[in-house]
Amino acid sequence: MRMQWFRGLSHPLTSDTLPHMSPSRQHSTGLHGAFTALVTPFDTQGAIDEPGLRRLIDFQVDQGIDGVVPCGTTGESPTLTWEEHDRVVEVVVDAVRKRAGVIAGTGSNNTAEAIRATGHAAKLGVDAVLMVDCYYNGPSSLELRHEYYERVLNEVADVPIIPYVIPGRSGCSLAKEDLAMLCARYPQRVIGVKEATGDFERMRQTRALVGASCAILSGDDPLTVEMMLDPDIASEGTISVISNLAPAAVAAATRCARARDAREAQALDAKLAPLAALVGFEATSRRELPDGRTFDVVDRFRNPAPIKTMMAGLGMCAYQPRPPLGRMTHAAVARCREALNTVHQKSPEVLAPIESAFDINVRDRLADDAVWTALGR
Image 1 (cartoon, rainbow, N blue to C red):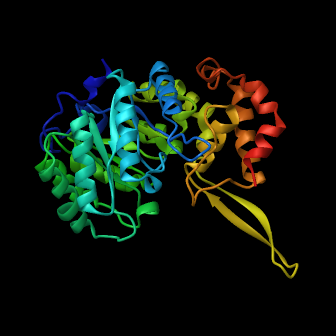
Image 2 (cartoon, rainbow, N blue to C red; image 1 turned 90 degrees about the vertical axis):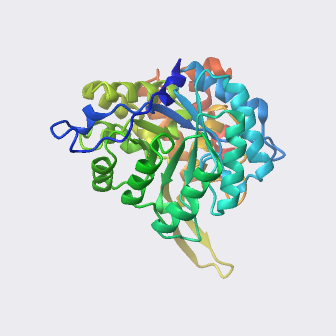
């Protein structure tokens, strides 16, 4: 059963106890594999599409994903009410039925809210919670450790936590040294870190500090295989966005990388690269002022707008993001369509499982101009 990746977590090891072993051979942590950062489907009225969410979960589990992560950034947690947030986690736990793991997003920039959300998730029996560094109010790393992570750990018993370091969105970051202190003080509770810094040197230093006591999970799809194959990082897996579309391929790539089959892992990574490149990207569009002056403006479209656009284009869900997220420009939508076309033409097996799971034909959807025109603005 896949749930065993959370069992039997090791006690902290130091470089003194394993002086001649590379990090890739030191690891005995149970947390590893491919985890999908789930989108939250909404219906045309803007409410949570629970049947659509259940269908997406069945697709993920049937395709061999190791676990799912509801209510992260990809799930549009900032615009969910806490009642909706709780309901999404409830639906996911019920739909998964212990066929895979569930890591619930429970982070906040308010410690009291994080404690409440983590307590709710723990009562539902999730395997762990993902807690993003506190966004906008920008606490120091010391404050993050003392006033956020440790408070949650002390208030909510038993459930493991995974800090999520993403300074590009949060504006702050838990220092690797403070992460190591958390791992040492709570060896059975702080079981991993989601790394979305893009800083390989930081990741190598993190591994040197935490040894085998803490799994490093990739938070950047384009970097996952490289992080896993780097012997000084030896990432255990990924919390992936593109696995919403291609769970089997992402899971296979992580399994190969973990088995040190670099050739096959890199081959799968290359097949997924056109999709991974669009988790966040820039596109230029023209603006016209009332007086007739025009300007070219670069828009950065960030997750989950691109993944939801691709899923909607393929017929996996409706494109209904919560404002302030909205429709991308026609040029940006065209790039999403182009990436999907590239993958479908070169590696049709990557997207093929979508057809039976969602009763669609990938080729027909990609060829339908009306579908993609309707998704842009």
